[in-house]
Image (cartoon, rainbow, N blue to C red; front, top):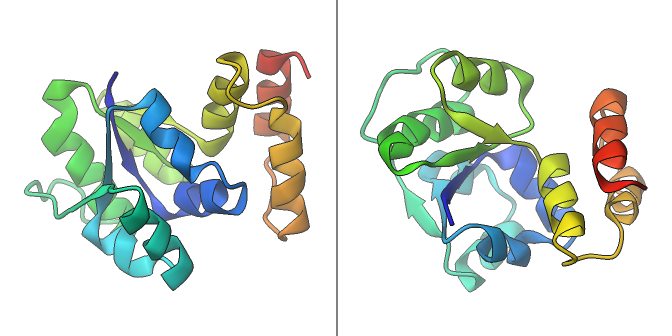
Length: 152
């Protein structure tokens, strides 16, 4: 199982949907950039600590044009690229930057689909409803892609 490096936007979605604890089921190591940890609300930080996710500061300084969380997530992904790390982010600019240099990405919706397809949850669509009820914006194209993947 690979490593995953998480950005704030995706972590928040997993927190809202109560799927944060599922990360270790699909990834053998979960890394939170220090700047992302500092951006998180206290209840989310408590969960990060509870699940024993690693909090690290990147050594690389390749990306400088992003906000602190995205910048550190991208730079940590570069640091961990040789060991096959994934970047968990819903930030379109970060996804584009990662793909340009060969970093594999996964969105919260991709994660929900993986949980559904591995029978760890009964419905990915119900998770999206939780996000909507919490006032989270939903990308229609990404939602449609997830629903097609999961057959919902």
